[in-house]
Length: 275
Image (cartoon, rainbow, N blue to C red; front, side, top):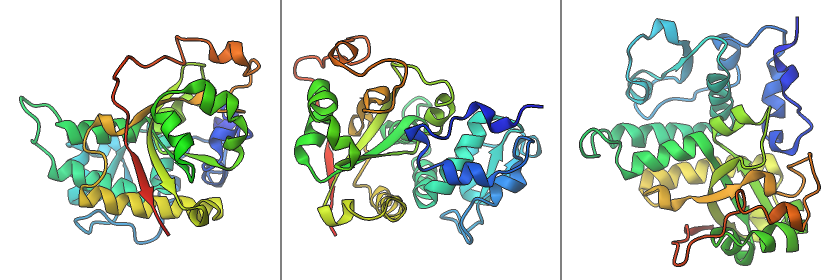
């Protein structure tokens, strides 16, 4: 019997913030809701003050997913389902932000026309599924990402990814793809400029700070108004993230992956956070 975690190569850099919770899910059997619930911080509640917990999907037939979480705290979770496993892991890393996202989904319900989600819910869904948070103290690096100047940010400034630029993965659909990554795997990035004093914090402290700050800003309505708030980011272009070939000039010349933006293409905003 193969261990359920055998397909996950934990040494790869994109698992950095998820190694600990994955290792905590010990045992050869695919983790059930009891183990997933053990990863949640104590006292985590929805904005309606209901304790957040993962519940087998077969016990919640026909529920409206986001509404049900807000009203009851119950997160419908399918048995032996990788997508839902990684969603649970994202809840464990970004609990405040996930609660805030759920609350905005609930309060924006019905805001779209003709049954559509509406701009804000579209942005939340995209961020929840394929979002990353990219932070740096350098406006130059973040502007290059927003402008899709791939050769500059990935090749010319490759060393910046060793500490000057940091990436935090939120999207559970991205996590689901990491066991078998492909070159064109693209995230949608929320770009944030931090003070050097914040960027220099230990990674776990910085992750917790981002979780709390972004939750507050989302509830205040100051971020993620639409999908234009997010910038496309070819993840395997990050130095060290792709291991099947050298990340040289030829690698980044692949226009099917590292696409040149159209003229006058709008840039995603760069948010700021000070100490």
